[in-house]
Image: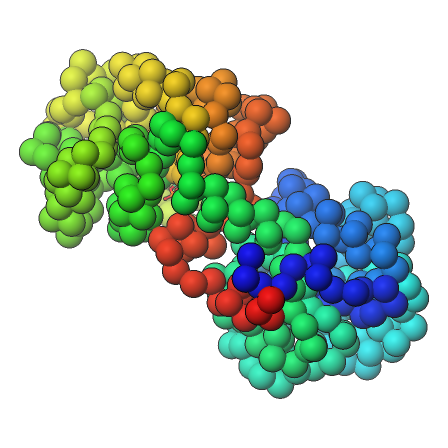
Length: 407
Ligand code: AMP
């Protein structure tokens, strides 16, 4: 890696500011429902504490919009972390100011402090230089281990690097860059990439980038209807991005010209979408699905929309995944939040896990699906970054990585 790594720093007795991604999901009572992101930071944390560094952790949690919100305090995370590492973790209810300064000044070698949610200040997301300078003033070194936030140039990911002696990548950051970068650029073949999810527009650049590396691309989820429609197939009332039909058609054709295969669903689970008068928590009308059935071909009747890939598609995709040596997957194959339409996603998860290929799951909903199916242990790498993974795969520079000290 051309950037400094945590192992390049001599951290004993030094104050190290570590940007972590503790943006954990919370339930209505404020309880942590999934601690994967906290656990993902443990290798970096254990390394620093074992070597006698004085560790200052900082993170964002949710979207507090620049003002303190008790529901988005990181305090419960400090306790959770302390239980995981079996050491006390101090907590200060601010990320700047006198209280923080005082606590930092009495930190001993091997002590760990967690600061309050960075996004209680608007200056964090605005990448305000003064805010960044004040954060940096607590530390000799900066370590960025928040891959999930690396695609944003915020004060704690980018600005802060201008005010410390050296900035290095933590172990999670290194691992993410290795798997999503080097491993996919030099894959063992055959390399099968699977892409699903809601929108072609979100992923067209990722599709282009994966087409350059993978041998076969399997498409599922709502984005397959834009692809199918661009090929003249009837898709009924399925979700289609009309303004992306041209680019989708060109992508499909250019792949074929390069000898790459883009596979589209050959059958579907379809249903009639009915908007009810009931509202969900966010005030949106609750949608129900009726008359769910399988189609016998790739085309969909008027009035029905595609909600999952069908059984023939599952079998065809499984046949392609089985002999692969590398698999990358991002995005569900259907509306998997509804258990009636989760079958395609879970079958694909199982095929990926059973293939024995080096398997890399690109964050977001596909990681949720892998967790829900209990197959996590059989996956080579589960990325912790949703948006960051996709931007990195598109070939974009991640500001949080670019800002680290060059080797
Ligand atoms: P993304 O964030 O792009 O990976 O999209 C994930 C979302 O796509 C999930 O909330 C799924 O419910 C949704 N999705 C997947 N397949 C479909 C479909 N056939 N119709 C509507 N939404 C879908």
